[in-house]
Image 1 (tube, rainbow, N blue to C red):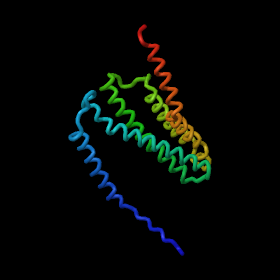
Image 2 (tube, one colour; image 1 turned 45 degrees about the vertical axis):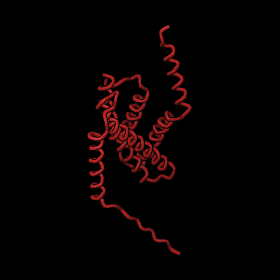
Image 3 (cartoon, rainbow, N blue to C red; image 1 turned 135 degrees about the horizontal axis):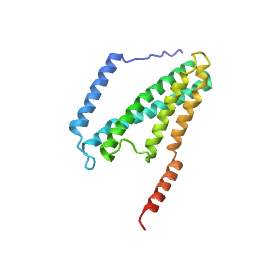
Image 4 (spheres, rainbow, N blue to C red; image 1 turned 180 degrees about the vertical axis):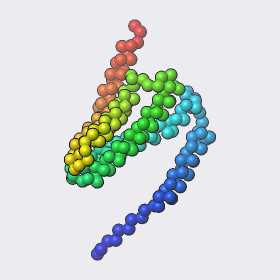
Length: 187
């Protein structure tokens, strides 16, 4: 018995219209329905955008690393292209994360950037790592060997980001931070 596969694709104008409606609805909810935060006031609303943009950037970087692994494993040139596109989108969203986070930090902390915050610095390192990947990728002439040079970089960046989310690593960091706070108390 032969199975028939039917793929239904939503037309691009319909997707664009649905996106426009949903983004407009989200903006209306953020600015006219959601109450101001008790501590941060109006500036807290930037998190409605910042967090979702950050998660999208992480997803793009993880997708780029996954496709780089597929490219290394199967030598599929399409996987390399998909990895490149995912990393490119991740850099765009990463730029937005850094901008929106800095705006919030200036309002809340009085500084555009704090080097003492591990998560900020780690995201910046990840962002710069992928930006360096683009410079390295385009410093080599386009030929079949160019795709083979850089997938390990994408895999390494994702691995170091996943290490940060490892529960053991998080507990060790929390323990170090707690000890530092205890030692900073006045005696």
